[in-house]
Length: 259
Ligand SMILES: Cc1cc2nc3c(=O)[nH]c(=O)nc-3n(C[C@H](O)[C@H](O)[C@H](O)COP(=O)(O)OP(=O)(O)OC[C@H]3O[C@@H](n4cnc5c(N)ncnc54)[C@H](O)[C@@H]3O)c2cc1C
Image 1 (cartoon, rainbow, N blue to C red):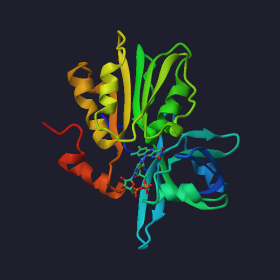
Image 2 (tube, rainbow, N blue to C red):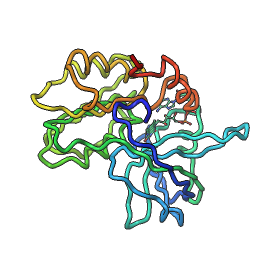
Image 3 (cartoon, rainbow, N blue to C red):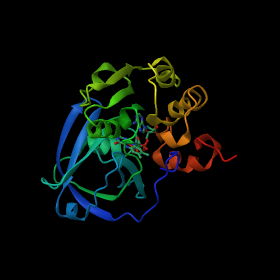
Image 4 (tube, rainbow, N blue to C red):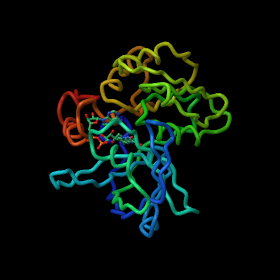
């Protein structure tokens, strides 16, 4: 994740052919696709909770493109991995694919890569994101020690997108329903949150402009160090992922411009 303040070393990612085993609607806005088949044996799991893969698709014009998705869970016993896709309408490739795909369909992935796992030495944890980051946040919450404390703040566009997440008793999960996608909504929720003492470990990912709006709330107002914050955009409103990725080389796509 080039925009993260914790950049993982780049290693070559294997290309793996997988097969859809089953799909489950977790909500009207999120579909879980379980992938297995012979290719699973080549999947090299990672300890990171936000490990992700590049999924290969083809545009209607026949051009190959990739889309980036979190590996929500790996079940080595069942030889399957799970990816949770946001269903965001008819636009795009990955979202519509996941909404309609049936068992037996093929999917080629590159990966996994990764870069974040909760810092076990942190005093408390703060997770911030939208539905696209729920797979990574849910995975991180499940990995925390039972006595961990903190807060997850998740913005969704409607109440029927709210899910039951498994988290330690001391980690609250606050859902914010905002059909208007106000860009400061998450930043203001962070400002309003009870701020605990001690070293906080922050994981904040989601729509790019909402994530950029978090910078003053985290770095200026709370004085956090870059090293304790994993912050990046997962997508950008009105942009395909191709455009979103290309814009990482432009000022609009940069979170921490070089001095
Ligand atoms: C490291 C990483 C991990 C990610 N993990 C996940 C994950 O686990 N699950 C997941 O669903 N997404 C995840 N994403 C985001 C995902 O890659 C993008 O949402 C991607 O653009 C979806 O591709 P698409 O083909 O469906 O739409 P695109 O062709 O890329 O875009 C078409 C249109 O849909 C809009 N759009 C794209 N995504 C969304 C969205 N989430 N909500 C509303 N509108 C949208 C775009 O702005 C554009 O206007 C992750 C991204 C990164 C970088």
